Amino acid sequence: MRRGGSARILRRLALAASAFLIAGVPSAFAGAVLTLGSPVTVSGPTPFTPGCNGAPQTGTNFPNAEVEPWVDINPVNASNIVAVWQQDRWSNGGSNGLLAGVSFDGGATWTRTAAPFARCEGGTAANGGNFERASDPWVSFGPSGSVYQASLSFNNSNFTSAVLVSKSTDGGLHWGNPKTVILDTAPTVFNDKESITADPGNANLVYVVWDRLVVPTARARGVSFEHAIGFRGPAWFSRSTDGGDTWAAPRIIFDPGEINQTIGNQILVLPNGTLIDGFNLIFNVRGLRQRGFNVALIRSTDKGVTWSRPIIVSKLLSRPVTDPNTGQAVRTGDILPAFAVDRSSGTLYAVWMDTRFSGGVKDDIAFSMSTDGGLTWTAPVKINKTPGNAPAFTASVKAGPDGRIAVTYYDFRSLAAGNTTTLPTDYWMVNCLVNCTAPASWTEQHLAGPFDMMLAPNAGGFFVGDYEGLGAAASAVLTLTDVFQPVFAAAVSPADPTDVFTLAATTPEVR
Image (cartoon, rainbow, N blue to C red; front, side, top):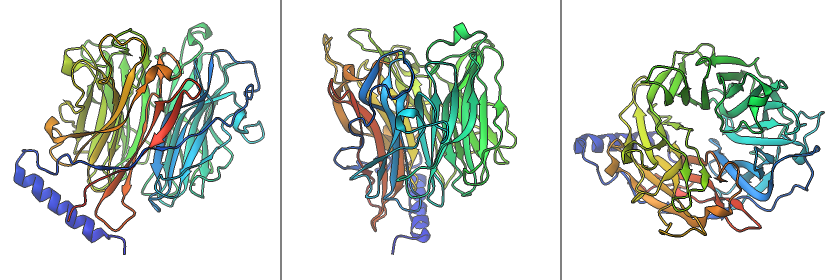
């Protein structure tokens, strides 16, 4: 038999007792050396043909460039993993389409599939995917095994932008026609940075949240709103109460006011059903204390019908990342905090890029946690192990089923002084089980690299994604272990600028 709830409860009690006995001193279990599998390539050569967008496009396209992956694992079958990414990135926003990688053997092998979010992947007026480009891939499994994929679909030739959702009932092998959550054609608005969350406690409930940027004139809109600062950017929300078949009229759930905005909205569901929407709250006009970037959240105790006022977790003190030797721009998740929840305890975690630990010199990865549903948070601590003045960037965070936390990030520690011809970049994971507000409790391991970031597509800087995916599931074998599944983009060659990779990171067995 697969391990039951009683075994998991006993393990939690043992870990809690261990944490109590150490009285704040990091234990041997705080950060463990995980068993890493061999890297596997998830993506492949582009299936799209030049000109498939159906209208003349501006900007530079990068064929075979796969970036910005996200991932989730089927709660009914931990061997079923779905990763999604942008395929053939454009320099000025979006890609030719979003592809999905589907695995039924725990990530060892992958099959590529697609929902028709854009014309290059079969989108038409009839099926709801009549768009030139797609961006911001996101995927989420529901408790019954249905999986939902969301897209920011838009046109480069005019001002149309939309948030679309497609559903699969066979683990990601086939996708239904997209449902339109919101569609805008005005030249002064743009929908941006959507995410989708299937409620783990109710198979009928699915949530989508995004920011909707508004500018005073079409001239101010520019060619690409992605990762952008707008004139005004409220958080918008819609939910489905019938498993994604229909969607409620979209509406604002938080408006920070004129010349202020949100970005990076992401919904988490606490064990008691409370919804958390975490985001970067940007105050361009406000008192000195809150002006700038803030890691923030709002809460809903009625499944999204009403929402609280914002709670500030911390200032977000990031800076744009550049090549330390040449000053060339590297586009990262510098304004996007990431959030996770422990579905057993309800503990919330947030990570983000921050310069406070270096006196403003370079970005590190900040970590904070909340044990009271997001009402109060611990003081941020640095958890990356990057030496010297090399920046660390684009962090992801996930809590495993048995409470261990994993965080992934890139850094430039392999870059030698004076090297101006390549930009060696590595991908790392740190993990922690107890006493995680102590930086020494985190153990670091190398996942991939170094690869040359200069080979990546240039989209406002060398670009592998504003975010990267990180999944977690209980082991599919008969041991008391969890498996973290990082899914990330890395540069490969001039002809194959970036690919999406994954590997399994398995926690030590607790006996």
